[in-house]
Length: 51
Image (cartoon, rainbow, N blue to C red; front, side, top):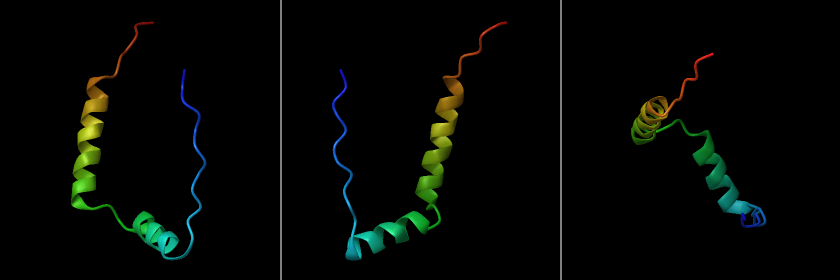
């Protein structure tokens, strides 16, 4: 059985500003490389069913 989801934290002040800056920043080279690697793995695991 799954654990219940905890309360969502409320961001205020400097924490909220830092979070918004991070979310609006373009992805870094490392993040792009990580996304490409995930895409490769996702394509490998795709299952095709015959009709």
